[in-house]
Length: 339
Image 1 (tube, rainbow, N blue to C red):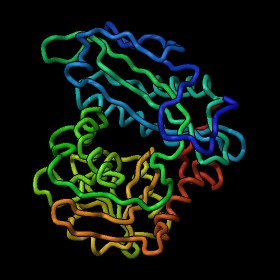
Image 2: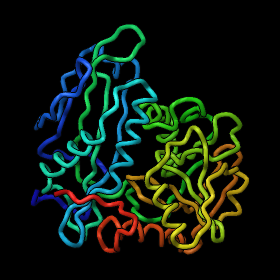
Image 3: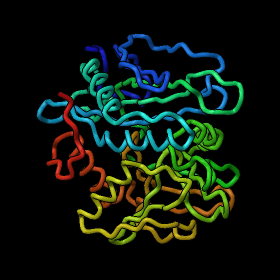
């Protein structure tokens, strides 16, 4: 671990020492198992491979100013994992089992939590899959819950720097009555073509519009969209958007700063009226947006005239990061100490 360049970590997988696993069989969860293997044995007819019974989460552990390691809002991730499980008929994971597994895997890999002053963190990836074999289209009768961790740097290589994004209409990430509101792998598979094309065309990500009318902002690639207008924090409300825990936290911070929070539909036509726009999520926290290009109409919306993130986005980003790294009191009770 001494050879890790903590300040220049990519957002990618890096081997750590251990992961933890637990199976649901015969109507009950078994005991947690510790493994040093990076692979899993899985039946060729497992439902995760054939019928998409798979859900995952992403959260982070931080080494704070006092030297302690803390995890950000893990309960919300545990609850969201279970909403995802319910959405595709998988066995839910008891909250206490989630907590025990999370604390165990972080402690087993405590040396991989980056130093406090590096801007990096330990990414925690819980995974729940249908591991039981089925040939007919039906839920599995066996499930595997596991968590692995890896140290990561910023999601976007630019870090907290304004990025350019692209509005697209020829692909949908998810439908309003589908699985867009839960964190399942199929949503991300559906976004790959548009995302990769955006990269090739010089953009950091693609902004998806609502699947029905193509008039309203949906997701900003793998993240939630938000906008600042005057003293308002505005973010889309839709049945096809994944409720972001980071977005939820930013809304709380905005209210704490005396701002008005608006959770509503956002029309593409409104983009010209906003002072600041950005994308937010666990991986990137906030990615301020400099330019939005509409791929179909050619319309361009520009922000960040001086090349830097707007003042409100910057303040929100700095406050959330200060809470996560222990530089600001945790008045909301979001941080959990790993004992």
